[in-house]
Image (cartoon, rainbow, N blue to C red; front, side, top):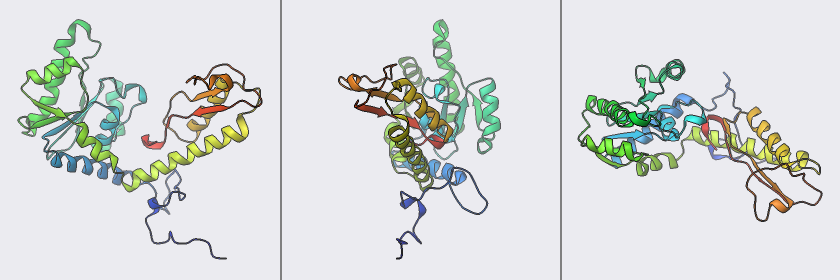
Length: 282
């Protein structure tokens, strides 16, 4: 009996059950990270033209990563301490947190050589906020002027009131970056699809083990959550948020955090696994 061989000759990413290893090898083309970086940047530039933008200025961690392929942990993803600027016709500039983080970025990102600058952090600067937020905006404005796009539409993805006022005080035409960034990110490149399949494979395996090996009478919700968390990290996931486990009476009303309740025979068990897989895909 001949098995299904219809996949032969078709792109690997089209087949959900054909998943590459996370490691590299000389004998097989797997996820090509150089191509991934180039394809993502190309999609962002394409959407800038479609939306007639002079620059993208991004603070959201996922958007910074999309443009620069930089990552320094989940804790600094969305707290306004790092940002990136992509000017029309130019290449992205990363503003990384000053100190050891800046040095790590320069070591880790050879594709960003010469385009990493110290970020100006204005959040939590208390009485110095006005001065610091204006310095931050000046750092962005410097990039815009270098590329002669400061008179064009400048798209920003996220701001607080202090930064909004500072940008407007410089006379910039500020617009929303999310239509362009969302349009770029919603269509996945071949390598992004491969990374999504890797994340799905890890998630599938964790749920199988939770159901058939770990979720037994006597284990607590927190213990089961810890087993899932450990498994996800050991298999290559980047970030594991709190894995919700609710059982028995904690399922109605749904208690959306694990407790020290012991799971009993016959309990309904709800598991909500919120995890970011390899290279930030989930």
